[in-house]
Image (cartoon, rainbow, N blue to C red; front, side, top):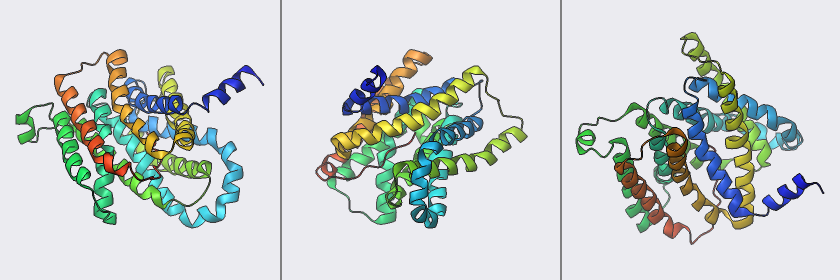
Length: 313
């Protein structure tokens, strides 16, 4: 057994390291989106990211796609819409939001995802709620409002919010829809599912990128832009997905889901270290409020095993 193979065998037996790396890659996606400014435009980044993802994953997925095709075929429209909402729309909005607001804001707002999943499950599927959810999620909303208003009561009362922050909230809402309806996915191999979702994201991102080109707002990637595309495709998409799935296999979805709360924390730390962004007092209050609200809401839910869908950032 080669050294590299032994290293991978060891890595795939370390669930906490795998899950930490997963959240690190997802947090790094926001950093990459910020670094992309001036090197590749948002819509171009989304299109090239998913093109590269599909190109890499397709050879490995083909045997599974052939075996799963009869199951996939009647679900293609559903999966096409799901990939558009969860992958293409989310990334287009997040990368655009990063051109208007700070990476720290984007990272912290991502922590509100469970709020949107809860709200959509309640409104669409009429799922029952617990007392902790009723207490926790309004606290999360307050945290989001603190971030978007920059801790200013005047800005909150006058609805004077940053466009990038609002766009990021819309992105999280879009991903919330994806997460909720992912439970209806067909029973196929994860590589088959990932390939169809990624391919649909690539296809639906083309018209938006074409619009960006037609309006002369497109920035074709330079060397830095290409590096960012490679990172988002390999690390934030493929490796993160594989590591997440393996981590869930080793310790279960409930314990693995707790690592998602590391995304805003790691994203904030990296924004400070690599982008020299300032961590304001309202950031700390907002982050503590959002994560605290989510933690309270999840207390009751953790007593039952729930299959948590693998997030895709």
